[in-house]
Image 1: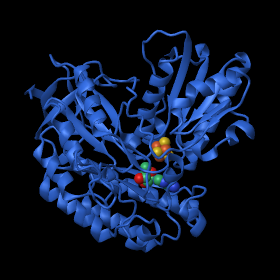
Image 2: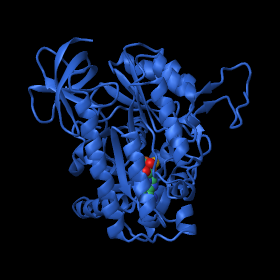
Image 3: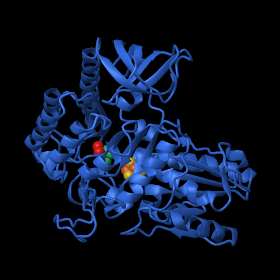
Image 4: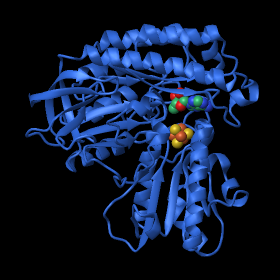
Length: 479
Ligand code: 5AD
Ligand code: SF4
């Protein structure tokens, strides 16, 4: 995912704004057009889907007109994410009039949430597959060829796609995602994910480490360990912390990070997303211990008011959150911090909203994804609370949160002027062929003149200028 210019991200739309056409070069007889919406997990899943269908002779294409099968990997997290996919499906159905043999399918969270509705009632698709059903895609496509309806939305307690080697799509060849766990058991009251992605399950650490090694061999320099709640990662340990098989190593998230960090000092490690309720000190310590584990953490707070947090079922208070932040800053002083914030949750008073603003002032996040609350069917909040904050108020509060964050991002970037950072070069800047861009350990994007430097190299860059979204500088040598 290209995120060089992240002003959009500051507005909280990056998650839905980056439908990417996925492409790879393997030969095949049938053509697959795959589009991803939503979170990084969906982009990572699309690489698994491409791998499964590649084996069945599908070649990916970036041209819808030549596709036999079009699959949209969808997001259900907010209503506007779903509306966007519906519009896209309507457009694709118009295409289908020209090419009646085209198969249109929907994957991911919206498929799981709506089950056969898009197929039977709305008649927008031929195929529906939920996040745990991708192994059955070849069979589902076969069913359509036989004139049957193809739906598989079964969720699994075991599926981690551990043995499937993802086909890296839309890749810059520098950084890649590694999915380490699936599902979520947290039941935040606003969130649809536990319903669309099922129960939490972790992937075998051996398969994770070997994926990291393979990526390194292919020239990748950075991996992001992905999970809905990475701090709940556990292998060979029960939820209560007891070891299951004494003959095998028990692996916590901190230990997993360490195992991946040991693959090579040349391979950078990032991870997402952490949960304040489960984040432990050993994660921060491992972060501090390994130079190649990036010093940045995405820790969604959602609200700065303890009562709202309770209604959100987040499992922590304002004070607990601030304590976790202080703990991380104590152990990793130069850590980059980012968060997610929701405005206008059920019953949120003006005073409670002010507490979100004051928490932002206290923490001064480097970066944030900000959203207005969108009620989702079947969630605890939908069943228990009224979605009673007027739309104008939700927007007004969101704009206040965005304004503060813009200010904080700018302040944080200004503080970096004059500093030198180790940067991994990801490619040529979107705005100028003469400039390169990469990220520092804190996950900030830095743009600088190309000179003799090349993609995949680690360079030291001195920051000279900035905007709220980007640092600008000059390379001063190799790192
Ligand atoms: N409305 C608005 N934002 C939501 N998020 C999750 N569910 C909702 C919802 N119903 C946000 C949270 C989460 C991020 C991925 O999306 O901030 O951390
Ligand atoms: Fe990702 Fe699903 Fe959440 Fe969308 S709803 S952001 S696809 S996990």
